[in-house]
Image 1 (cartoon, rainbow, N blue to C red):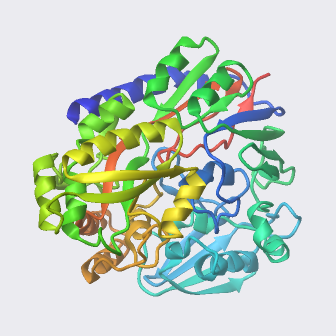
Image 2: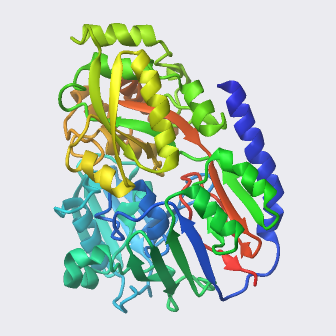
Image 3: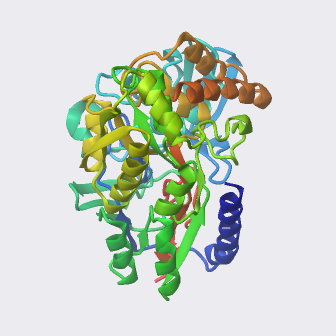
Length: 509
């Protein structure tokens, strides 16, 4: 693992050094339409109702957030909220920016912010209720001031508001359009959504009344939905598109050989993993969950599916993260014999058959084949059901089909949000909607009780140990962000979340 990590870091630094100059070259120009190859169709263009972590790239152009984050560090920065302050441990006051309008011309103010926050935490269709689970009441305490009363201290809340929960939709549009707002979103962002043809294209046009001075620089963007990243990469090589993201390490050599392309890369929180429904049989049995984890050789998985350019994952955070707990590394040593023994102790002496869900793209199918072979050696026979990302994500998390889902956790700005979204009782990403234990519930709350970093790190250690001991999830590898762009694309920078944002991007020619 150390060798892989050194290789990963060295490669990242070399690429960063190579392309830092390219980012800084030239004087930004206005005009042009950026054409992007995107590997997934959105599940929704409404931040409150979507169910896929891949939606963010489509949402960022449309929606500003109350709080923004620094790309390399995830430090909280002012957004639609110019400032915020905890007046006491259970009161967060947000002071909002003046002069901001939604794309439909209606004003963004305290009432609009209150509407969005109330909708996000209470609406029947909201998939992000858990994000605001610590909020007890929301008040508009001035024309441009919102006060959040909390059930308990929540130091993670500012960064939570840099994610979906802080994306502001037009109340007028939401009320008038209802479910159609999923497809016709209205925000305050740098670009207006002008169309969405399923599995084909999402288009955007410049917001001429955007509040950030000098932005946006481009006239618009077009996201072409190309599920196979090999095809997407070829479209950029051929000049049909300007930018492709979510590439695999194996595709780096293609970028290097193409004279017209530049690679952009950086570390991310993106974790390929297996979500488990531990709220019902058979995976309500701890021994079966541990057996799955012990049956997987993460180093071999990384070599087979990521060319070794990934870090084996033992928790939801990579080793570079401040809340990473080194004591839990290799918490499930690869041991197929131990896996078989655990399966037998769970009541299945002849092994067990399970149904896992997965995605139908080529990269996902390769991962499924590797896992099927590894798990079989541990007495776990897997049958895969596959489909598109939105289809399979909804089937597992909403319709409760299958015992597990091979997908990825795309990361969140604050780690407490990651753990709450995966393991809190009512979270969308807790497929069983069940409380694992009172101890885990209490530990999750403790991660938000203090603003002191050392205290928070100790609290995260408790959460992570409970998760590892319980085998509640099957983290596999952390991967790099790897994108390819043509020479005319300027100003793009990766971020630690690994979700493309085109803030400040401009086209030279």
